[in-house]
Image (cartoon, rainbow, N blue to C red; front, side, top):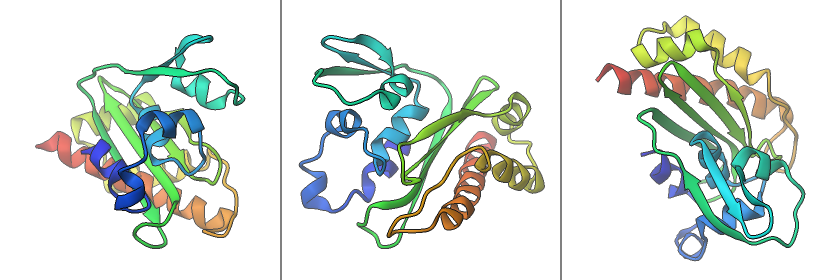
Length: 185
């Protein structure tokens, strides 16, 4: 459901039906819902001239005239959750969040900060507890706060840096709670 959730609120039906995953990834837009999700999914890109590279490396590179050939999404058994916050339903996101956990490892991606999405690894102990569905509410709240502090936030017309930092803690906690619920089932 993470992929469905990441494209559900993209601007509006007319725009969403014209947008492509490749265009969203290649554009490396700070507000990209799709970039946030695919960074969490252990994705690689293949370019005509630069060849194959991790999406995280590509997202940080400077724009050039290369051509995106394909996205390679590695298949994993893990659980991925995506959430975002918007000021109105079809507006650009104020903040996007994706969390993935598998085999005692995990990562967090926050996007629309308003800069490009960035990824950090989950502490192994927390990832194992999430995968087992055994993290307490207090642990999740503390972890969300600690992880959110690792990101930088900026201000624009959609929200201040302080507001985004607060949202980061909230969305991270909600994503981790959702992962726990899925793991318990």
